[in-house]
Length: 302
Image: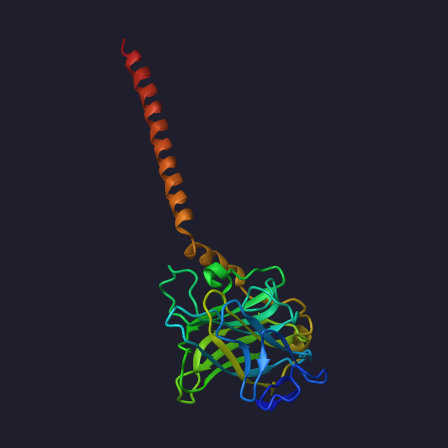
């Protein structure tokens, strides 16, 4: 497998023309601004959101994206937020609540979530990296940190690091792989690997970030997209051309599990209450039937 850097989909210093020239391949949105060293998506201030989007739709079948970023701020642990998202979607340049992008998106979102909204998710350590595929009808559950629609994820201590932070996304033969290099060792470590991911061609790459009551500096330093050369059979070629709507094989098997795991305390309370009422009702009916049977049996002996 060979790889070729695609400069028209890549972003690196000195960021010439971004935000001021219509001829640039990239477009800024919201509070994002360009400096000589980075693109700051949000400053360390409350209620900010910003993004940068490619103007050119990507028609590559197999690709690899390397994102160099930095998240830092004055807030202590769990007193910072909210995070960064890397996008490959049909829509572009639309503000919204999902890390600065619209909800009900169509395509792939990879989220570096730095603040836990659902405190009872004790199995997760934040910051947390996760991926989601949307088809335009699925909402990102912000209150549950995206767990119901999560394809997979991993913890990633990416805040206030003295060394560089990198995120790696590879999409090859409908397989989505995400790796991280955040330990300063120049080594990739696995985060998630999901087969059966169907993404159409012709979508846009973008990166966004958002802050709320808590904040951070969210900086994008570079994005490098590589085209991967993969040999395919004629049948594989025909199947690839049929992908029009993003989807994931067996995704329906993941959601019921997430719903059960994510039941709120109120839902659990009512479930237990109705179960107890059901048992009580069965006991009452049983006692009544037993009373009638005993009465009829007693009468037979007289």
